Image 1 (cartoon, rainbow, N blue to C red):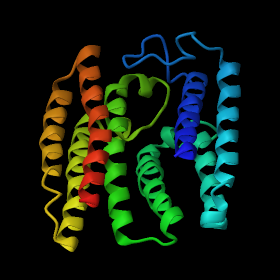
Image 2 (tube, rainbow, N blue to C red; image 1 turned 60 degrees about the horizontal axis):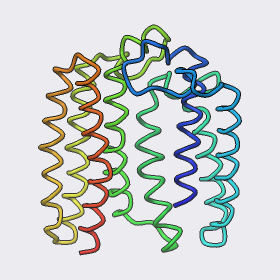
Image 3 (cartoon, rainbow, N blue to C red; image 1 turned 90 degrees about the vertical axis):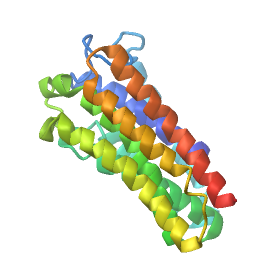
Length: 247
């Protein structure tokens, strides 16, 4: 858990620093303030903090090797590398429209799959389905952010999927990811003949309402409302999924 938290924090620190350096975060930003862009933290300080946090993540991860072997070393190194190249380096993933695949893959499938692997010693189809569901829900946060920041991202040449294909594409992406996460849970329910998936249908309804609000959003407050609801959906979905699996 500590490794996952440190990777998340380190990635956010790196994004804050590199987005500022590339001009993606400016004073005209509609979303929540970024520490470097708003002048709260010096760029050099944020970069130093990024290396410290990711370095701590690496050493914490070494403690897991006795439980998962060399595979975890590769996963840890890839996680740290992707935390940096998500918005940094000559070919940043987020600026090429690949950020969504990174989020679903690493914060969903890899995070859930290898957490399970460390404790059980093997992988299963259920861990892939659960990881995919979690990843899709988490990526909806990125979709909302990219939908909101289309104009600013265009100016900084940040070619997100929203920039490449337009806001209508992002709305359908949000809807399909919401439905897709529930389909993963429904498939698990069919395999194991459980009824715990039924509460997940609530998330589909909420997701559709958020996408409708996002389609009409104009003001920073309206965008923030969509982002807040989506943020709440992420831990709520995870909690309901865990309760269902344990029941």
